[in-house]
Each structure stands twice: as structure tokens, then as C-alpha cells.
Length: 96
Image 1: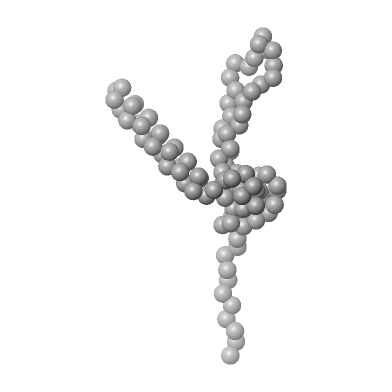
Image 2: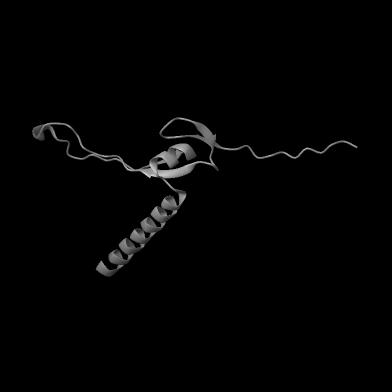
């Protein structure tokens, strides 16, 4: 009797933001990193507009442990952002 092989889905791999280690996405801890905008230019040469979007990065468990990052922090951060969006929508509806 021939042995039946089941095809496993390919794992998605990501790289750690801090150390560059390659690891499966399921083990990685997602983090939103907001850029720190402190331009070192003279006041006369200040830019009119600086746009920088938050970056979604992944961190390996060892770097997360070293920096005190937890998966629950990520979930809490998402919930807070969702509440902020809801409040903004309510405020816009009240102004109209």
C-alpha cells in the first residue's frame, strides 16, 4: 500500500526588526514602530511638512524578552487604536 503524503502549507517567514533573525511569522511578535521625528536642521531650513507613517515590524522572542515586549501589548494597542477611530467618527458625526 502506497503511503499518502499530505502537503503542508508553506510557512511565511519574517525577519526580526532588531537582530535580523529569520523566523516563522507564527512565532514572531508584531510591533508598531512610530518614527521619532527630530530633524537636526537650522530653524531657517526647517521643512514645511514631514510625513512618516508607523511601521509594522516583527520581533523574535529573544529580542522581545530582552526589550520587555509582550504579545498582549500588541493586542491592547490595537484595541486602543480602534477606540480612537470610533471616537473620531462620532465627533465627525456630531459636527455635521
